[in-house]
Length: 94
View 1 (cartoon, rainbow, N blue to C red):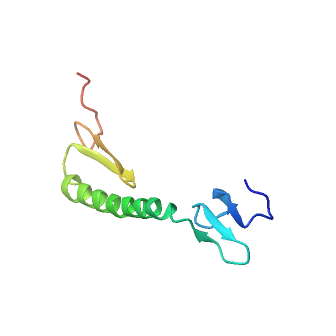
View 2 (tube, one colour):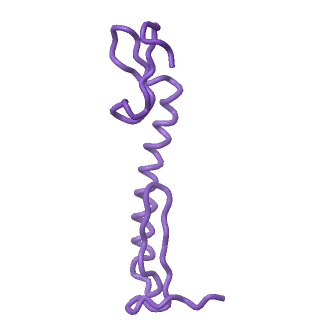
View 3 (tube, rainbow, N blue to C red):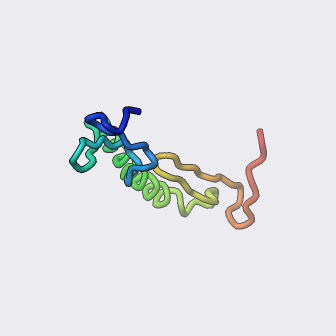
């Protein structure tokens, strides 16, 4: 990390309000570095796509007698398949 008297100061990830690395020019407000913008856009897009995936999975598979649970976060989703939805008996291992 550069010394405090340097022209630019870099805030640590945990210090930034939005958890992205911020650069601060002396006497100005913190701004995101131009290399961080594509990453941030990708993370935001993954969240939107993940919501769509979850909604479609629940719409299409939610009523199935062999699906016990559908859960996930972002673009990572899991589907729990069972033999009987009421008793939650799993399929036999094969």
